[in-house]
Length: 528
Image 1: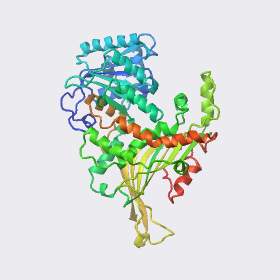
Image 2 (image 1 turned 180 degrees about the vertical axis):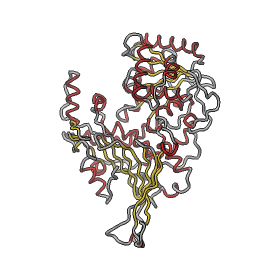
Image 3 (image 1 turned 60 degrees about the vertical axis):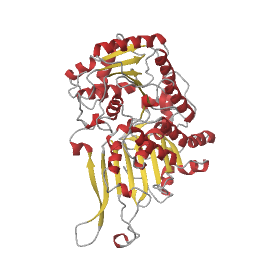
Image 4 (image 1 turned 90 degrees about the horizontal axis):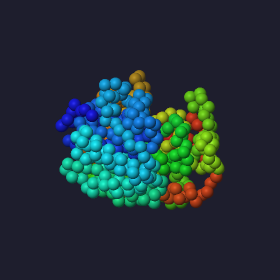
């Protein structure tokens, strides 16, 4: 695959957090290439990297799995093309696609088929010769965690994993979330990967960490002297982290049932975002130094007691409602319909949560006493993700002297999606002879500010793996620390044996119980 930018890479997407890292020649092997993730995200990401001239000049992509129809290479290329046409941030340009598809191949076989791995090994060695690749491999496990162990075992038995990286050769593995469904299963997945791959070879991916605004949290804090001195319990009243999804579970019922919002969103995405906004300044941008600072936040999260779970955690399930004028079914109806279509018995009275709200505390010197309110849910009024840092009220003197008409607080907002940007709400005087204070917003939008679309998260993260930059990937101890924090919640839910969860109508902002959670502290959820 051609690249016009060999050598020094000027595009900031390709530079990684550590300046000067360059993606190395390699073969990207996608396990589960016939799946939805590959179709919607991975293939378009690779195509966009090729469009931008950021892939290494010696590169090939090989899919592995079952599901091909007819000739595997042709089938995967056509499937990739349909995904690019539908989901790519850049339009399909035939000349670039021709360059892309000549490097795309497929090996058909089940994940437990030893002969399929032998065919894969032979194909990769053939591609090394064809594309001038020095044996470098990136294995992407876009598969359920239950099959990770067998994939690792087969790769190791076939001799496709280098024991350690050298200056000229590497083998790396990308492990897609979810990494387990609880602490014990996460440890099992990590242990399975560790039987063949060193920690330095392992990249546990969370695509939220590849989003520009999430990365920009470090820049916001540590490259601007006006913010960092204020981000502590002396000046901050509370922090709200929201990930709102407009869609229901849709075609993901088979995965989502029994998993729920806590495992699907909080354990990885939201806790990682919390770490980015709350971490202490790292002493360098070396990957492990940055990850050490984030891991310290997880260790400082106040553990939940059973009483805390009851007081500080809310779970709920959406019921039928109206979204943009369309009537949509409730979660339990979607579960019943899904299992009926595949000829299986639907779970009775599902208690899988589609909404979670949490009041969390970080017990360290910086954040002591500052509540972090986290919420995420499906079938909410709009798709929006943000971090809102609310400053403490000014004293009730001068312009804030009237307790019946208090001033609106200052709020620093990081908008993660759909429109990435930053905003700061301040008070300003309305024009006129009277002194009247009105909240105004100082707003920065990435697209209008820089004049182009931001790269997709998977583009950045895949490129970082090729360059060997692990800064934006989760380390083993991070994953397990996040699970350890949430296990008391999962255990309390399991022991409660409730048959019905609190409910919220589709198209609303969640259950009344979530409002009561934050209003008990004299605060309110932000309107997005």
